[in-house]
Amino acid sequence: MLLAVRLALLAALWLLGANAQQPFDYPTAKASTTWANTDASLRHHVTFTDGSVARAALLRLNPARYGPSFAFGFFCRSPITSSTSTCADFLLGVAVVYCNSGALITSVTTGIPQIVWSANRAVPVSDGAVTELTADGDLVLRSSPNGKTLWSTGTAGRGVAGISINSDGNLVIFDSSNRTVWQSFDHPTDTLVVGQSLTHGARLTANTSLTNSSESRVFLSVAVDRLAAYVSANPPQRYYDIGFNKNAAAYAKYNNGSLTVVAAGDGNAPPLATIQLPTAGADTVQYMRLEHDGHLRVYEWRSSVGWESVADVFHPYPNECAYPTVCGAYGVCTDDTQCSCPDTANFRPVDFRRPNRGCVPTAAPATCRRGGAGLVSLRDVAYFNGHVDTSLRAVERVGEEACKKACLDDCKCMAAQFVYGFDPSQGSCYLQSEVFSLETMQPEIFHYNSTVHVKVAKARSPRRLL
Image 1 (cartoon, rainbow, N blue to C red):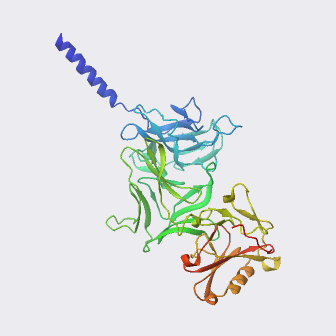
Image 2: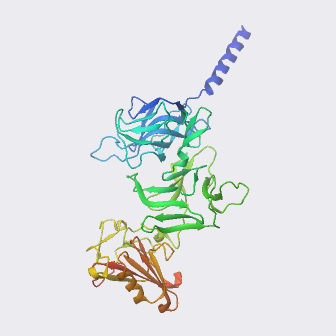
Image 3: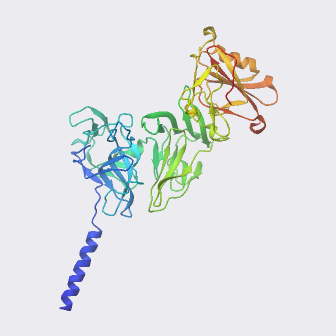
């Protein structure tokens, strides 16, 4: 009798161990698989307390078998307003979701899905949209089962066998030999996850706002001699960079604990540049996002609080005022990050209640002298990026009047920054094709003098709001 009890106990323990190893996630799918953006069609569909929705098509549990994990599917982060009862704008993408050991998406209060890649950021879809890994190997997104194709990987006819969401967050389409045919890591949007690289020629492009996932004008890229952040203009205006010796094969890699610029194919060479970051533990997930305000922030899952910003990667000189949109177009930023318009005669706030939204001219500025253009002169004011080499044009060794004339005579010039050290007749003049945020400055701290001359329709006597 005792032997029978022992045998039964051993059998129960064996079954318990077998069940403990049972994979509850579903990270792969074969070709000819379709997923519809409806509650009924997907295994896991969760609505979070802030109104966000996750509908997982593929799910890869954390290696610890619980905690922050990666899912591929339909995700909605649009806020619910008083006139909207459900989350309506879905992105097809990869997101971090919190799961328990049974691969159930939980933590609906703090574990809000963090979208780290999306296919249709500019064209959200609604209920009923369909994504399909077709029989010939193309991953497509359609507005409905028989609707318009909105996006595809273009991998048809390449021997595709299936698709997988990996434990590092990389969505991979593979062939019958398990070789990668396409991967999301090669097509970053606004986010990098640990292990992902930003290659030469690729960009991180920030969302337009917290509620608008379409591309903004803020981007990060790797050039042959620098990792740099810009606001798009003609030419793009740089606001932060870390330089290194020229290398045409340079790319940036997000390692655990650093953002490192290295040269492709030379694994033994020292890094070209390194930015130190907080190290993430083995039981959590960390990601880096370029945000609409120009900041590159690192977020990490903390079990006690949920998602938390643990690093702000950029440190532009001298302070927050060096970001291009901190006070919006034409806005003037002070050291305490207060925003105002250049004056009350020629400019008005976009939103009187939110000064950081920027300013607009009271009359459209003429672009040429013959159109009656004038200049508003702002003493002890600098441009957000100082006087770097991304201006429309630079005129060296000139006086202030020559600088002003250069802008008035140039149809593309919308502002000129005049900078000098000790001799005002030997200054530098930087013409800008578009005016982003300006900043007040103290010559004794900046070690130069600066005046910004902003083109207006017809200059009036300025009354500063600062």
